[in-house]
Image 1: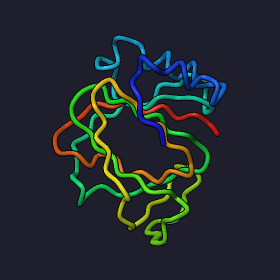
Image 2: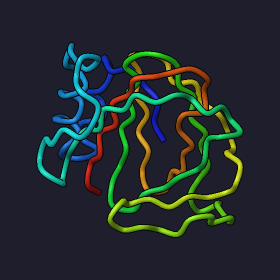
Image 3: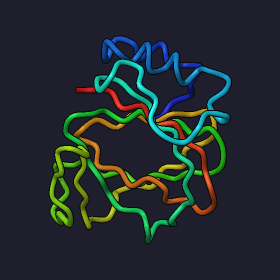
Image 4: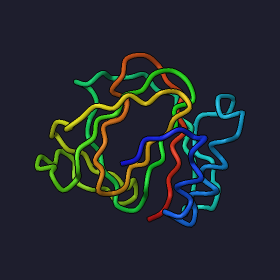
Length: 148
């Protein structure tokens, strides 16, 4: 898991060949005005999801993990807190992996809760189980899905 400021994104370009394009998209000045939904950047290899969701609090946020995609979560507006726990330490599978949605859920508690400020991003690899929407209040978030 990585947490950093969008202004520092260039230091992560070498971690994946599609990170440069992913961060270029996040650097657009109009993310808040984009419609909710999926925006294809490179088909299923790289795409963005614009989400507008209410927070669920710690008690309503569930750990999830992916196998095919890395998540880059960027807070555009509102408040966000995300729980984290290594996927390898998750023992309570509550919903098995669903390949078309590339997601599975766990009932384990996160090891930590991390505040994601506006203008910052978090990168979650398949080894990072994460529980988004753990803050209270609405948020606008861009989630970039990068094929592993």
